[in-house]
Amino acid sequence: MADPAPSITLYEYGPSRSARCRWTLLEAGLPFTSVDEGPSLVGSERLKPFHPLKKVPAAEINGKPLFESAAICTAIADLVPEHQLVGASGSWARAEHDQWVSFTLSEMECWVWNTDMNSRVLPEEKRISAHLRQNGALFRRGARVMDSVLADREYLVGNRFTITDIIASFAVKWGQSQGLIDDFNHLQNYLERLDTRPHSTLNRIGNFQT
Image (cartoon, rainbow, N blue to C red; front, side, top):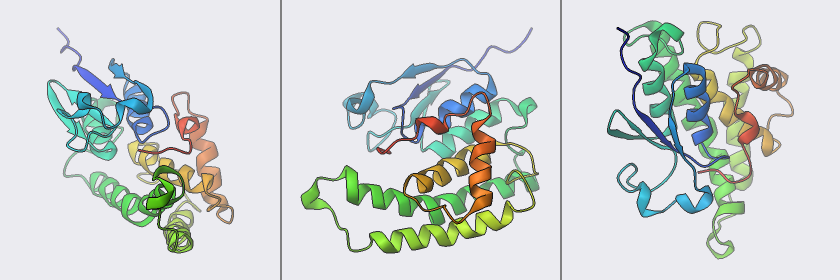
């Protein structure tokens, strides 16, 4: 008899990083319960048991809370090894996944997030605009690396689609929304290629990120 499907609840808000988790769940073919109450969910007491800062995405997987989109996506992919959405623990493919996820978050996504925080999200009196230009330059520095890697491959790990691409493409798309990848043809092609996948959630990415 087949093992029962895992119990998964995803706390999400459409244009946020939770779009990564939804995409991963759809690629994995796993049933899940969605809790999406719009922007009012963010900061609500409902999220406190699942995220210490009451942010989305957060998830409950088989009764255990988990937060941060990259962690949630990786945990989901590990539930369905037959789909090969992430390299097995201890494999070189898993090391490369960890490498590109870390690179994406530390060398690309943090800069566009800071720009949005200080141009859209925070109240105007709390914004610091002095470093916005530097944010763009630092994002492009990371984007240039990824663009060069994608010059001779279609995907980041093993040259096949994995959740590494879900995580990375979200940051690339975010940079595109700020006009930061106009000079990177390979990244533009990467987004177009990923957006043709039936379960892609790249079109959910909007001006408000969480």
